[in-house]
Length: 371
Image (cartoon, rainbow, N blue to C red; front, side):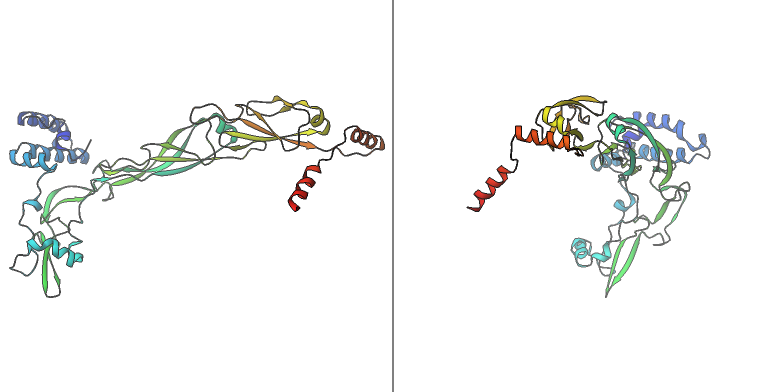
């Protein structure tokens, strides 16, 4: 709910009659009136706001102006326009031109006052998980410090003063005079906004900060298939906004520990299997690990070291809800170490029966390049 929407404050529509406005105010006043809530600053602040809405919406002129501009006429708007120039000479028509010539004189005006909409800051938190947890997902929780809106002033940093007092900066005049060379410029007082009265005071609950720090337990569901460096967003769980600003978001940055067997690229996983010289030459079925347990992988006859074999949909789950990635197994042929003469003779016999020159193609390419 917009705290500055008078109709929303009273729980009525813009078409409500004056009678409906009065009834809505009476109903809320019975709930928040300070006499019925002694010592409750929150009730007092809310009563001040609904009373302000009641005053404006029951006055035909103020209501018409509020409906046109979306805000109540202030004392600044109704007061005499600020004068710019020599004392006794009106330069009000030259305000825009003068502000360009002497911008430092007008920069302070209107600085005081609450920020109606200020989005809360985001919170960033790191969570370290194992490789297996990243594939299956799991719920977790952690403690995080959040800035929350002060319940007494609703984040506005000020509450209505029980005893309005003249502004000490301008002496209650509502204007401040500043000299620039031989010229005198009058502008609205930045402290009181040109009203001449300080009708508000710093919130005693938050000492005018508008917010307080509170540590909370945050529950988060780490989705299956999350990768190292991914982040999980929890909307609205960041720091609370000031005024009518919305809350920030909470970003959980995931750090996945390395695995001794698998490496991951996207949703695909990669591993290596070592096979013997005989298995590479004749082919075999060997056991290889997968995220779901060991399976038998068929090694084709004549496979070469470095060749990749694919196991479809044996990789990581996709966070997008599509099918799983694949598992690519790189073959590494292990050359045997020969110690006896009999084994050497068998290998020489194998070479005579299956003559081949694996370097022939490289020599031919080199000769063609040199021509």
